[in-house]
Length: 140
Image 1: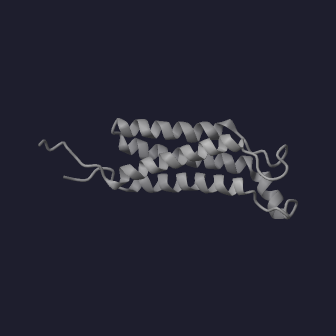
Image 2: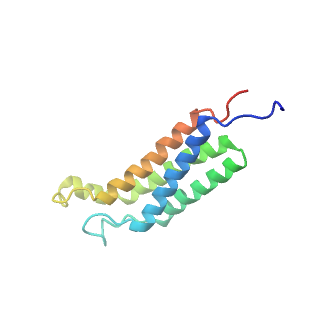
Image 3: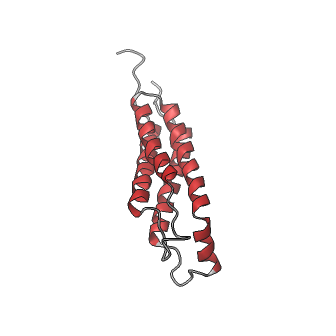
């Protein structure tokens, strides 16, 4: 057996889990078309195709880099890309969140679709950040 062989570490699976969470968030965002709350034509429309492309594209790139055994780059992609998508999402949904907090939409509160997408994108971001610090390959 050569000394170049190495076993996959836990960090590799964390990278793939972060990519899966980003892919799930991207697909869910497309399915709901980024609309939240009762007013889907004004403040509740938070759709931005760039958010979708970042999440889905970042997941595909991370898996591709993992296949090419570029684990460090893959973990960086799973950390940076969902973070950028999260920033864009916060920028697009600012008025929806303000309407809920100020009381314009207080009867209904946050839409469950908004909460689900927010949890998915935050999970992708946090898992991607954790993937940076976890060892991808076990030392022989």
